[in-house]
Length: 349
Image 1 (tube, rainbow, N blue to C red):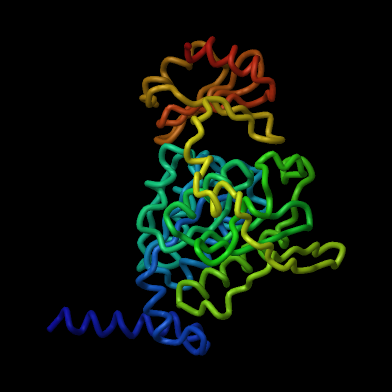
Image 2: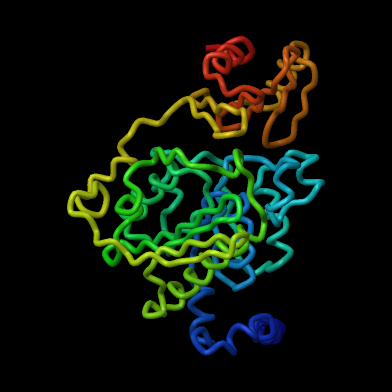
């Protein structure tokens, strides 16, 4: 009897929570049930990702997987909506800090957190059993990896990008639309980034909102309402336009030839993070963080540790950030030679 009452109360709470959403005819009660049975992966929990996650969790998507390799810093707070000063002071991983906030927003949603770098070796596992993928990344190398993994697995990918006051978004559905490679042949975009020219938060909100509404359309099954154009806008200069979709290219290595090159490339051990004076070096065995905090303390100016990472301020300037999965950020330089030298000096070969 008690369980029956509890279930009734739960049903009433759910009806109240989503009442305004279910009144919207294209979703309704049937669509809400579909959302509750859906699973979405958000890759990148920065500016776009935090808005995307908030929309998905508030909408009642049943399972949301959060994937990100980074931790919260003060410079994130201007535009990354789920984080606060305490998160930055504690250097919390973004997936952890976001999960803490999202759990308070909707405790019925199952949150899965992956504090990892997305690589050819793990991307298919990260996207396993997902209904769609939302792109919250900030570089085309990772986007092409997601593109190839999604088309290989038949999972829709909703792309978004924001820099300055400009934003764009597109929906890529395997078997129905051309892929990202058909629009942008090379991952070497050579363009501006948030770290080089900045970004204003309204741009981010608009892009992520466009992505989110397309996600809702797909999840509730309203494919006829799906936007088929590449949307681009500049909210500061009041420009906006939509580009008609290009035909899928027969020689596209992804949706044409189905060779999926990003899945076959070797994982890079050294990656420069554009505009951040940071170089990521991977390939080390998993770190015992408490052991490495003790080991680095006598040789560096200051060491700060939490259960997820160790930050060591170097006497000669710069910083090492060690993650449990074996990654190291060398911060304060964009010179790979110097980064390798500091890595070898403090971590070893």
